[in-house]
Image 1 (tube, one colour):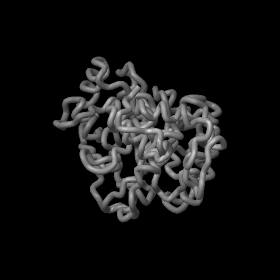
Image 2 (tube, helix red, strand yellow):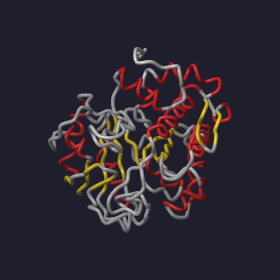
Image 3 (spheres, rainbow, N blue to C red):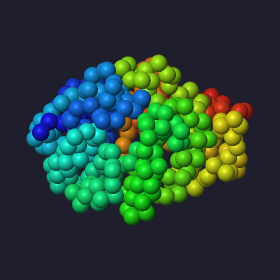
Image 4 (cartoon, helix red, strand yellow):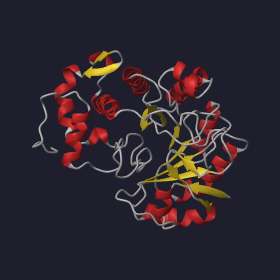
Length: 330
């Protein structure tokens, strides 16, 4: 059986060469089954996408025999270089069985959690994935609202929300989702959507929309730095401090004040923690949405340097007059 590995994963396992300042801490595996049956406007794996099928977001995914991956993966896990595995699966004929095949090959030999991100159709599938060794299952929403979901992903939002809610109730703390910032939602839309997930004890991963050649949204723009930084900061406060949108102030959909959370937000922003990759523990997704050395570093895959944290805090636009270049990470 052949699978794909993100190029960072292949390098971490000694199966490829890659120069990077942020080695991946999660092994990302993707099944090979052809184009996805769905046609998400932003996805390189979409049914009508015209780019190569060896990409997901801006990352290259070379193919390997699964049997050749298992040994190096176990060694990397035993040595502490890899701390989580994540199986990514597109939706097509036989995809769920292939998911189980990969899971059965990987989960028994690893002393680390294995997540699965696939298109779940029924609660019974989640139960089966857990029975085969998955630690977490992701049911991706991507879009923050139903109208936006219908526009960029197609129908099915109501069913997916019902499924996600039922799974979260049955398996508290073991369900994940993610949102892509920059698809056309407002900051308030996505912040309230994130809050609703935390209220259900669902883990949230944040991505920045990345325009990709060959997709229907190839000509759309990625989110502005300020927009993404404000969502990141609000996300961190909601996840780790229990903040909620009703305590924040929005104008025309933009976050303009954190209210009583302002001082705490400034303090934590200067640590840089809110601006690191958000999602499952030890998932750092190096350069998944970013071009190394160019443009906005949306999700830092490592601890931020003092100057980086200060710049990110400034980019939020929420601390006017409260920042200066002499500040350092505390």
